[in-house]
Length: 117
Image (cartoon, rainbow, N blue to C red; front, top):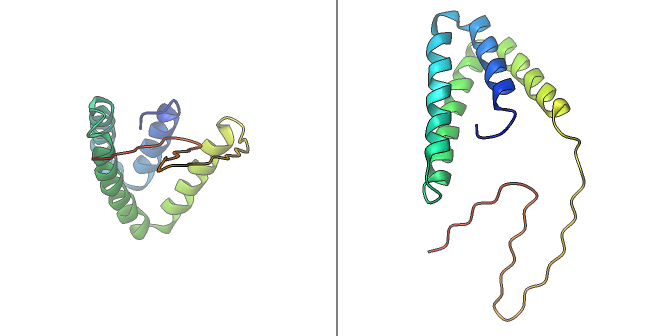
């Protein structure tokens, strides 16, 4: 929800929702924006917790739609494929690291959230 592809994804989800649940599409669009605002406003210490909560809530909401209509699931998969194809070219990432003397290595090919207390 915090990436550059957000507008394309949001538009695709709203279009999908209007097709299968037109009565609640306006509510869905409002909820998407509220969720995005919450994620963008989250502090560094809270962002992972908020991201997980939003992910769970939206997975449940989408699953309910998919269980009601299998065609919605197929259209959602097509939307995801389209977004992946439109994104930046995929690159291969290779990591190599060594840690010594109680050292730690953190490597990521994308976002990485580390919470140590």
